[in-house]
Image (cartoon, rainbow, N blue to C red; front, side, top):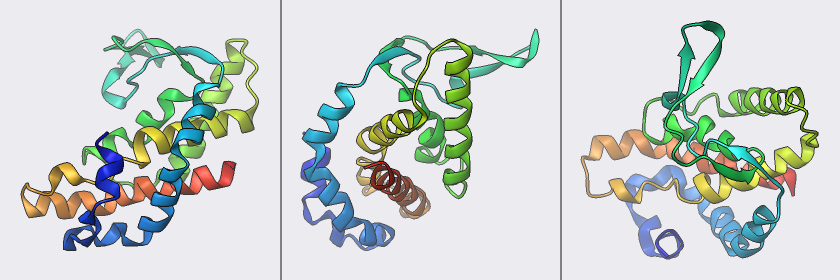
Amino acid sequence: MEVLPILRSPIWDHPALGAFAPLRAPLLAAAERLPALVEEYDALPRIAAHGDACPNNLLADPGDPDGFVLVDSGLWAALPAGFDLGQLLVGDVSVGARPAGDLAVLDARLLASYGESLAAEGLDVDPEALRRAHALELFVWRGLSALPFELLDGPPEVLAAAVPERAAITAWSLELLAATD
């Protein structure tokens, strides 16, 4: 109701959004597939998920140096496997707390660790199916809406800092989506 009309608007002409220019055509093409992508994602089997897994909601456990404690679990629900990976991967990038330069490396590590954790809990999830679920979630929930339209009326330096990082989120989500098609 908000993102698609903005993506279809003349927002692309804004001079500060130059890093998004090469993403316009592939993003709009993927956006046209959104009903089918959401349907595919919605049909995936569900498992328990935090719902808002981000570094701020995963605290080190003082009693277990290898463990952590989940906080802010108000969005805990049965969601498709891999739902939390997108927020873990790009949540801090979206808010400017971390650069996007290592998305591919971090993504591979998160996906592998998550798959290993599922297996350790006795859940047999095909790695390629998990990767596809993650790609769908990352695009639909993160990459599609990464264009920083909410910052256009703010300080120009904030917008300038956000644009390349947010463009990297969209670019990675499109790349992962295409790689798993």
